[in-house]
Amino acid sequence: MAAKSFSKKATAVPNDFSEEEVDSSESEDEISKVGHNLRNELTINNELSSGEVTNNEENIQLNNQKRKKKKTIDWKKKDLVLPAANFASTFSPPPVYMEFEPIDYFYSMFGKESITLLTERSNLYSVQTNPNKPARISEVEMAQFIGVLIMSGIYCVPDQRFFWMNTTRVESISSTMS
Image (cartoon, rainbow, N blue to C red; front, side, top):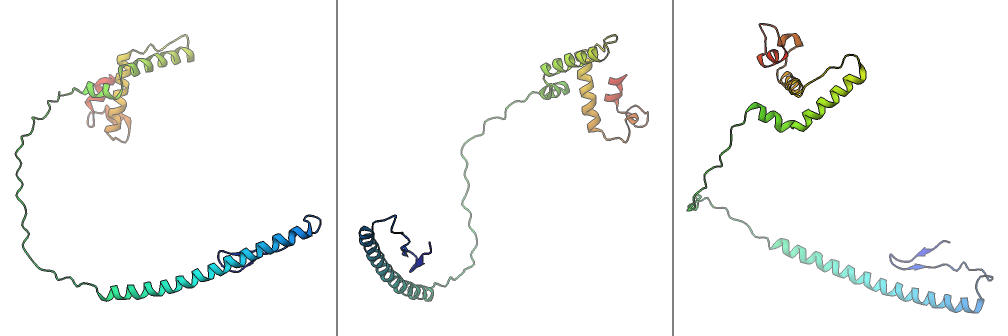
């Protein structure tokens, strides 16, 4: 079905009905009504669009007048006078923080439950891989192992042997490993 467009809003509907689908007397009446309605809408749309053109021309003229009436701003140099800041209230004393030990920082990252779980799973894995010789890892050893891993991440050395060498010895790691 090809439709011809008369304006942006009104579209003419083509008559593609066959005689079998629609009774001819009824269809002619309906088609004439639709055509009449579309012509009325087209006339109204044309009147509106011509009115919009005049409104647009009036808006352009008003905008030009506004541009002509622009104010000019005169800048003046003055010294900046700051208002006095009077603060009458008192501050409360700062909160007292406890000094944490290194082990407290360690347990803030790894809870005791985490260490227990890691120890149990490591021992289970040890028994599953070699039932004749289980590792029997304690919770203290697991905490020390995690601490060594953290410290070895802090100290950057080219090889792990440097942690135990006399010239580059890292005491916290070497004393834990011995």
